[in-house]
Figure 1: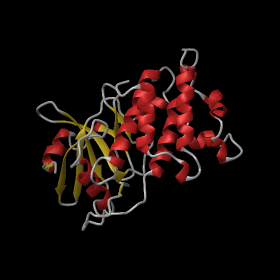
Figure 2 (figure 1 turned 90 degrees about the vertical axis):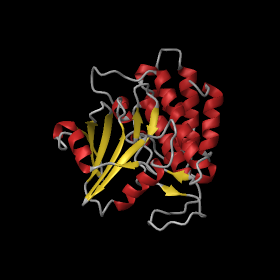
Figure 3 (figure 1 turned 135 degrees about the vertical axis):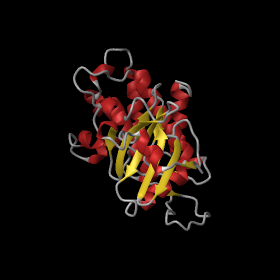
Figure 4 (figure 1 turned 180 degrees about the vertical axis):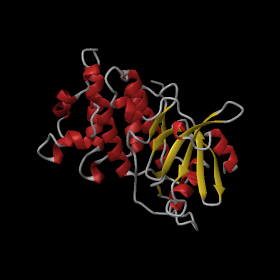
Length: 276
């Protein structure tokens, strides 16, 4: 379990939760950038309602407090004081993936090596929580909004508030145990994320241009015209097309037809290498 932190520590680190320190607002709370006296940068999430979001708070502590993985955001500590419920994470200097996939005019766009590194990293993280860690966690909320990027553009899974545990042998007294058959929802969401990495558009935005949803798992050539312009003309067409084919398999309409995350990760690793 990670260490508890005093409320005055996180309050002082954020200049009394100054609006100038706010870096994001989610469904359950506001994220602030904070700094400790020793110079450490933190990302501090202050929950809106400690009773309403008790389950989300407990899940973050239970999962992120127990596990360390290169593609999971590190939880450094938490605060429980009065009505306050606060989670303290390692600060990720490049922020959310979503802001890089929809840059404003004049902003830097992601190059192909960064995009494939992010794709492989997310696949690695998901396959690990599905198949390796003993709780066998499914995330159930994968999107570009919950993928954080460190200074080297290594992706980190965050926002485990909707996660469920697959392992039926673990007794749970905190109302955080839910049983699911597999992680095929995560596989589908990962496929959607791949489309966004390739095109800059969400799967929903892409699907609106097709007459039926089955086209999403059909011929990958359907998506050629939607590929991000910055990826074209660089001799990357084969790589991009290959990643589209992986995405198409992940979003097949029937969950039984989709691969597991471990199969997806192994496929990508075989094509592009573990350390791409």
